[in-house]
Image (cartoon, rainbow, N blue to C red; front, side):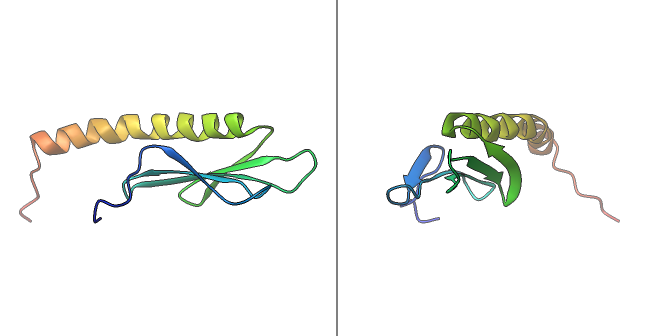
Length: 92
């Protein structure tokens, strides 16, 4: 990464009623919330191309994405700490 694209914050793209919000956490997590064309509009949420369902509002969809990231990152961070302390590879 050349430092020109920073993640960690929701960013908006699209025009008019085509609204997409993205959240990037390095190359590990690519989350997206997009507005559908239904009436009333439904918001689709996904993380790394895994569908997290449709939600009645953008806030609800973003909350679902953020809750999923938090629940998945807790065990990953714990494993990362163990790896940093003792990164032994098997010899055979």
